[in-house]
Each structure stands twice: as structure tokens, then as C-alpha cells.
Length: 155
Image 1 (spheres, one colour):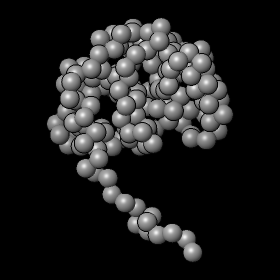
Image 2 (cartoon, one colour):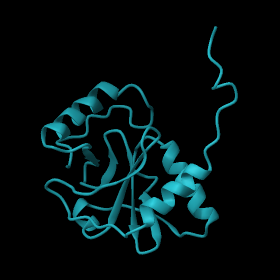
Image 3 (tube, helix red, strand yellow):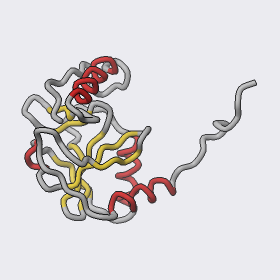
């Protein structure tokens, strides 16, 4: 679903807007959705309340243009880095929700990794290319490494 408003006051910093973004998540859940999509003042797709958004135009991976203020996503950076290494074209893009009609849209975050947007309440009809999500999840999973000392428990 599209967020009713953009509550972010510090869109480039994680933390200051968490309570406001949680209100958006509550709004989305009330509408039967997992995520609210935040739009810029001119209606351009920016990000989800807790996710980075990317989409596919054919075999090109589209990312939100750098000019739009949003939180830099760790999972998005890993996905883009991997895509570049594999020779996938990366297209910075500015789109209105309706321009995503018929495209495959992914929601990315460090907790859940890559999730496919299966529907957009009140928005465009989205698509899925069979097998693409599974392949990219496997590629990202193959890059995971434990943090040094993370397996140690404090005494």
C-alpha cells in the first residue's frame, strides 16, 4: 500500500524516525499489508517504511535514484554489488507507483533479505519472473560470513 504521508524527518539516518515509521507499519497492517511505500512530494517511489525497494525491467535491476532522500540499505548495496559483478545492468530510476505495473518489485532489508512484493493494495498489479527470486536469494546467501567473535557468548 502507499503510505498516507512521508513521516521521515531525517531520511538519511537510521534511528530518529523509527517511531514514525512504526506508525506507518501499523497503518499498513490495518489495511492487510506488510509494508507502506513512502513517496516523495511529487509522488515518486522512495522506499518502504522498513525496506529498500528495487524492481526489474527485463534483465535490468532498477534502484531508486540517488537524488531521492532515503536510508542507504545494506542489503540493497550487497545486491547491487553482486549484480554488477555478474554483469547485470543497474538502472537508477524515478517512478510513480503506476509505472511499476507488471514489473517484479522486491523489498530488501537486513532482517528478511529479499522479499517479493506480491501485491500493492490500491496500487499497480505486480509480476514475478519464476525462479529469479530464488536464484538471487541463493547468491546473496552464498556471500554470508559470520562476524568475527559473533559466535562467542559473554561470560
